[in-house]
Image (cartoon, rainbow, N blue to C red; front, top):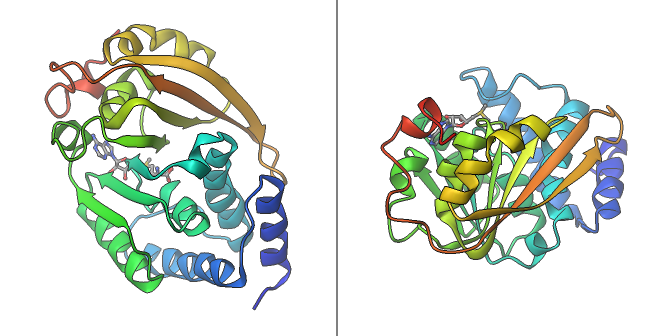
Length: 241
Ligand code: SAM
């Protein structure tokens, strides 16, 4: 079962202080197979080659744990998770982490329901809806230790979709490609409005493919002001600039 690629993945995870058991490696492998199989019926990912999925989806998702609070967190919300990134790889790595996934596309949520059942993951809440609407519900507003989003939108709009989920002193971690300087500059006003404060930008590189990644780590300083998030569609169409 633990072939070369899985051994390599285990070593990479160990390099960021994540120790994976055989059972966890098996869960990643089942997830990989389901991703490829379901991708034939619906658009989940452009990346299907096994090595690439392990590096660009699974390992990339795990790099969120370079932020020390992640491995100690109790609740994580992943906004616009698509086929489950980064939250499903994180949930496999940290089984006691409770995760909530919000995505506006029903078919992706159906895929994730099948994944959660097949992998026997407990503590996974799958929510079909717009982040703007779900972020207004008391059960989700100002509630999460960690909020993540990968490849969803530019920061100025994304802050309004994601920060309402983070509890005061919680973190919003935006996963970005290379150079975020301009995007961060552009997002300053929205950060202030949404009670976010930029803590740091962690730069890293994918181990084999070598492309650059940045984790923009934002602290939530206070409860979300009543005015936010605005109506569904508004934050990305008319970002707070
Ligand atoms: N995070 C995944 C990844 O990195 O592979 C998926 C990225 S995909 C480009 C963006 C996802 O965000 C889509 O699944 C889309 O349905 C979802 N999305 C976009 N706007 C949203 C919103 N306002 N509320 C919830 N989900 C949203």
